[in-house]
Image (cartoon, rainbow, N blue to C red; front, side, top):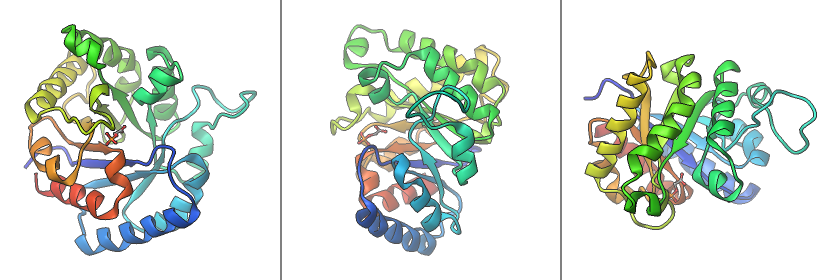
Length: 256
Ligand code: PGA
């Protein structure tokens, strides 16, 4: 049994509509209640417009809900952005920052991601900060250099964070939505490296901060990944849109 409570977060990405979401919320609610997996922190991250719907369906359950992104600045003149205080106002508990789709397709830099993470910590919002190398970087043997750079940028945010409310997600870019998963050993190696970097940089909660794996996690491979000593759960994309799959991933986290 690990000392860190596992966390499984569903990243719905830009998917869903009111009716489909309602089916998924209903299924998750009853299934997770039946399974009573209180030994796992479960977080559902739908797109912004459906956060209120998530709150309405999940607010009275043990399932938390979160946003997929947040502004790097406080309230003010920043058209189209959503702040930490707005999310907190809504009752939202978490935000994902630095997802590789945002880093690659929307040009988010380490600095922007770090600012977003710091805003979450300062505003009392749990943060799931994503890091991970591309295929080119892995093939060029640059995985550790990339992870070190991305983690270092997050250090000021992590230093001030409650370890129970700060999560690092290791998501190798080549494994996201590709059906290609890192082997448990590869994931463990990256997670141990990330933890060591945090400790080396003076993050007091380095041992308590959860490091979750993301990238083509399914019910079928969840157990082998989550059994690794430094893999504390998962950030789940595609499989989080299928209630049974997601539930079985949560179950795997509970017993791994
Ligand atoms: P995937 O996505 O599970 O569909 O690979 C994971 C993620 O992008 O968070």
